[in-house]
Image 1 (cartoon, helix red, strand yellow):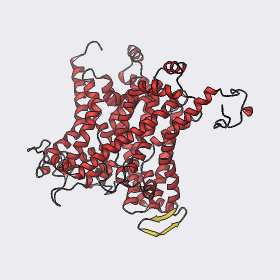
Image 2: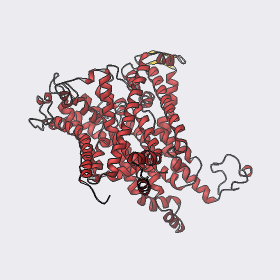
Image 3: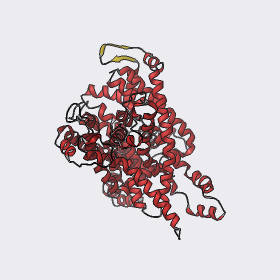
Length: 315
Length: 277
């Protein structure tokens, strides 16, 4: 009953709007206190590891700061941003990242939908297929990337030998195609699982009724299944797009970003660990963060009310 | 669905076969490479002509792999434990308690789940060097916990909502404090959800590569995925394909068995928070 406990409401009880309960009961107040206590550790860790470094990165991005030249450290305002945004490396890396993202997500969506249908409808061996199709999800990305790399190494890999001993990883376009294939292989099961959850929400009766009314399989898919699955599809697309935009592991193992195959994440990594340039590295970090924020914003605008988390938030 | 025509049967059999083959071939290729002799590595055939345990023997007797493997397991388990405990507390609050700022918490978790890791690497690298966390276990555990939390809060709050309210009320009527109600009543009921969450968080830690190569510099804290690229062949002129493939198999096969064993839980966990509603 102490009066100096954390006041969580903005105003004193007397000023509170009349439609609200004039005073919180002791139980409700205890509940609030417990709620804040329970979320506090998680919130502190998440802020310490993400929000604080981002703010610090903003500060670093305004400095000329190279670990190789520590004495030349100096505040230069937006100089780094000018340098990065006028550099062809940044725009090229962004282009590569966007190409990989668009193609891998689009193809993963189609294949994920097909896989979800197989998992949902197959008439025998369902357990076996479901289990096996999870393997690419479970495998370590780096291990899978090595598998693809060796498969495409001339005179060593089975895929290379099938395709006339070709060396696709030394060619920009072909290497990007291999990177996209590796991404698709790894992420299709995850996409399929999210879609499968949406698919199982489509009522069987509705399908049957449409069938009786003479709708073709394609009509049933586009008129009933797709609209009902829209929330699931949008969530899956958002997750996959943002995940794909940060692509790093596959490129790092497959090409190290050579021959113009580096993504923005590879560019940021190179600037930090090869050029030891903290200023430019931080600038790239901030720019990537802004890109991701823009993508998320566009998606969530597209979501409308179906944004993930709203179902949790409103209960 | 009553009568299955032979044509349907063949169709589904083909579809099943394609799915299984596509999922397995890249994995089997790694297994094949890991059993090839150093000279036969330059043979593109899918099945080794000669089988050898040499690559496995080589990496499993080398500290260059054993130490990172121990790091991977230790860092993964500690991060998972901390993340699941903290996420359970937060998810309980989200699912069961009324307090303001709940949607802010969910929004924040969602933002972090989508956070571009690379944007963290440069500032965290600087911070970790200043705090002496660079190239230590905590230097990886702290970011792993932070990135495990959104996943954990999301999955667990979905699970916690399925738990019957009344039991908790009954415990309170019987004189338990909210905290006791959490520990004695809800936590045991929540155990399945917590196991699922632990699996997902552990897989994410085990899989991480970017943070592992960025915040470590020696095998004292480097994890297995990050250590593989530093393997060397038998001589300067030998490509370490065999050892790398063997290492990839060693870090992959337990996870595959794990995934197969917990298949149902993983599927439930991955789809719990995301799609309902």
